[in-house]
Amino acid sequence: IEVGDLSLKAARPGDAAGREPQAAPALVPVAVPEAEAEPVPPATVAAPPPGPAMLGPNGLPSNLPEYLSQVERDIIQRALQQTQFNRTQAAALLGISVRQLRYQMQKLEICAPDDNA
Image 1 (tube, rainbow, N blue to C red):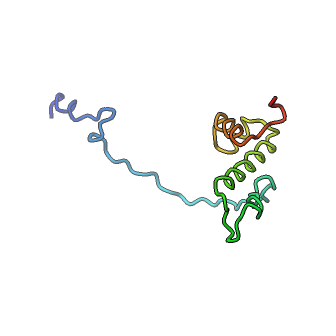
Image 2 (cartoon, rainbow, N blue to C red):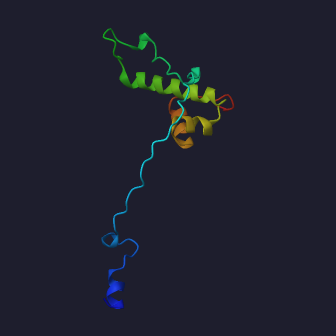
Image 3 (cartoon, rainbow, N blue to C red):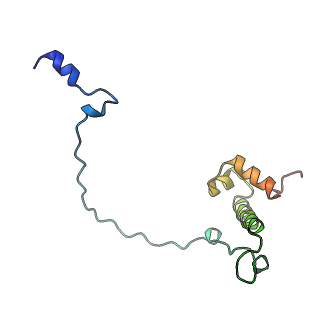
């Protein structure tokens, strides 16, 4: 083998053909103490859906868009109350951006105590 041949066969970054499969590390069983179950705080327990007044005789909402808006309104209000109306923290709790939260608050007509509306 000559030096010129080796340089052509050497793996380059991004060159999948030159890579060799690597062995995965062995899994070693480890004794882990069982975690004690902690009670779920009341603020994280799912709230019941909006009342039966919004449900038709068959148990389904008679106006789905209004029903979903009410569910979303209730969830956003709970997140805001839980964070003392800190929109950044409430958005993080809900897994959305602050901009999305503000848009939803405007759309659903949710006012924070410090809003001048």
